[in-house]
Amino acid sequence: NAGVTQTPKFQVLKTGQSMTLQCAQDMNHNSMYWYRQDPGMGLRLIYYSASEGTTDKGEVPNGYNVSRLNKREFSLRLESAAPSQTSVYFCASRLGGGLAGYTFGSGTRLTVV
Amino acid sequence: AQSVTQLGSHVSVSEGALVLLRCNYSSSVPPYLFWYVQYPNQGLQLLLKYTSAATLVKGINGFEAEFKKSETSFHLTKPSAHMSDAAEYFCAVSDLNTGNQFYFGTGTSLTVIP
Image 1 (cartoon, rainbow over the protein chains, first blue to last red):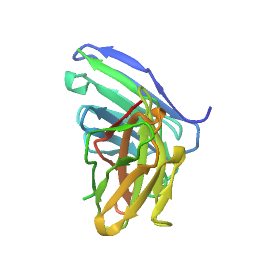
Image 2 (cartoon, rainbow over the protein chains, first blue to last red):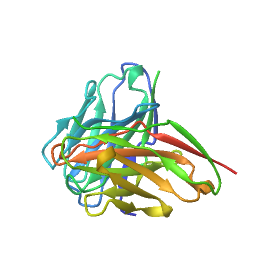
Image 3 (cartoon, rainbow over the protein chains, first blue to last red):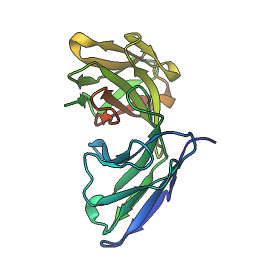
């Protein structure tokens, strides 16, 4: 089925460990996004990529890096995980800006101990 | 700056009763407004969107929302709640200035009582 695929679905990390969250979309969308979702805070934008080859910081970029590997794939890396990064991470994509709605992946639940 | 306020983090309704979830926005230019639904352990799905074509917008699963510029509101309604409507609902705003960025509200958790 067409959509946004995120891996892994669950992950437990120790403080200081690193990991990469993978995201791929097969809808030929130009823009891709990484959000984190925390209780009572809604979704907050970490990084986004308006088009292949570009990335920009969102509201909460500290502690994260991203790579837009090609049009399909947009990865999120935690270099040195901290307990404050315990969250549910969502990747999303859309065709363009403004009017276009997002298509979301099913999320990665990350726990940092 | 754009922002969204969702009044009521938790709403409970009886099955068959009216559902009303409130959303107020702040935007310096005409906004694009969206409602998303999130079922447990799933990603967000688009319910409906306002893009200035019509002030009353109909979405999936019997939901609709009305854009009221004078009240800067975009409340979500459904005439008769169903058990399957229990979920988290998010309002979001975007506009020509923000381009690629959405701003999400903090969400409203809807409980449907049998």
